[in-house]
Image (cartoon, rainbow, N blue to C red; front, side):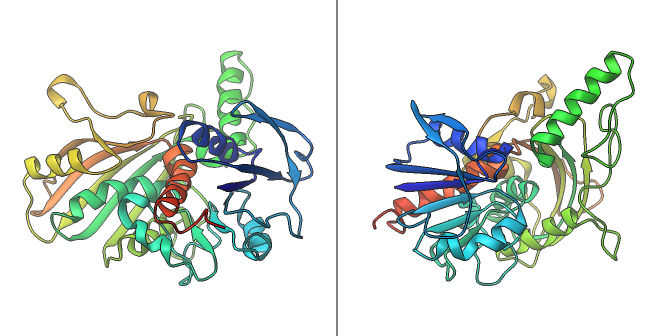
Length: 338
C-alpha cells in the first residue's frame, strides 16, 4: 500500500507514524507532507529516513492509495480534490466533511461498512470525544436501543494539539517557579483549573464541540438518539474522560451490560469499585482501547445507566481510528490494489 500523511509535523501527524509503526499494515511507499515551516525536515520511520515535502497542488498524490490528513479544516477543504483526483482515499481528521451527506463518518467498531461507500473518495474521522463514546455506546445499543445520552467530558490538553500540551506543561513549571503562567492557546490558565468551554459558542449557548457530539453520534450510529453534552477542558496532558448517562428503551441488567462491554471490540472493562478499580487518564495515555468502569443504575431514570469512559485522545481519538479504517478497507480489498 502507498500511504501519505498530510500534516505530519503536528501532534496527530506524529501519532500516525507511531501507530503505523505498531500495526501490521504493509507500506510500500510513504510520502510525508506539511507546510513550509516543516518542509525539508527529515523523519525516520521503520529504520528509513524520509524528507517532509511541501503540500501543494499538482500530482504528488498520484499512485497513493490512502492519505491520512490532519492539517486543519481549511487545508482539508482546499486540498481534497488534489488528494483524491487520482483515486487516493482521503481519511480526514478535521471537521470539514463530517456532516456532509456524501462523506461517511466512520468508527470501525461501530459502522465500518459505511467506509465502503465514499462517492468523493473521502472518509471523515469523527471528533475524538465522539469516537470513544460511540465505541462504548455501541455495546449497549446491541442490547437495547438508546433513547437519550447525557455526557460531561473531561478533555485533555492534547485536544488542542502539541501547543496545548506544551502550554499546560509550561504553565505548571512557571507556577512551580513562582512565576505568572502565560496564556496563549486556551482562553484561560489551564493549570490547576477547569475551563467549561471547548470551541466557540453558538446561538443556543452550546459550543461547537458539544454539538459535534450530538450530530456525529446520530450519523455514526444511524440513530435518532438524543445527545446533550457539556465539554470541559481539564489539566491532563492526554486521554479524555467522559461521564455518560444513558436511557434505553427497555431496562437492562448491570450483569448483561458488563458482559456486553467485555465482548465489545475496542473496549476494556475496568469496573471493581470494591477494590478501587476504574479507568483513569494517567494510566490510559498511549493505549489503544476505550476503557469503561463505574457502571451503575441511574437513580433518576428507570431505564437509565451511567458509566465512566476514558480513551487516549491522540491515539484512538484520532490517528488509530483512521488507521483502523484503512486496515478495514485493505482487508475488504477496497484499497491497495492499483
